[in-house]
Image (tube, helix red, strand yellow):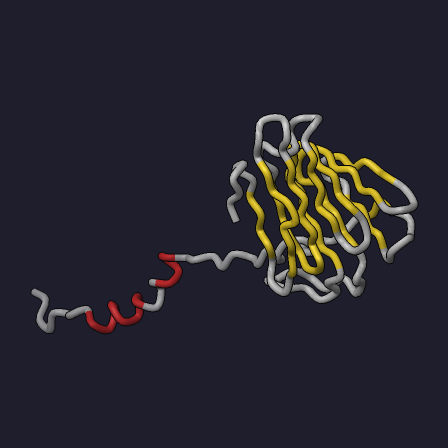
Length: 171
């Protein structure tokens, strides 16, 4: 989805999201979105770039506050979709691709920087910084099948030799 402030939201399969408030007005920018379950990748637009802007991505386990960034969230989705891998956990995973985010639970608040991943297992549990394997937020990249144009033509050599006309009387 392309939003009015030029933000981009990529909601993945088997996801549920509610846009509670999205307002772009001079001095009163607000983006409040509730990701009920599933996966989303988001690139913020103009909302969230100013200190006075209200920007929240709420989930059942924590709230993510953002300042001009790109990030991915996966919550209450243990089994992958769209090529992403299973995580065997219905917790909350947050990955910062660019910029910074704040994760806030009733118990604590942590800041994450580019490349960092946080995990919250259950409601009212601590936020953990973790490493995740490729494919938790995106589909696993399949190896590209290489095409060998000339190698694919090698089968023609025996055919060309058989078809070659050999003169019967070469004087």
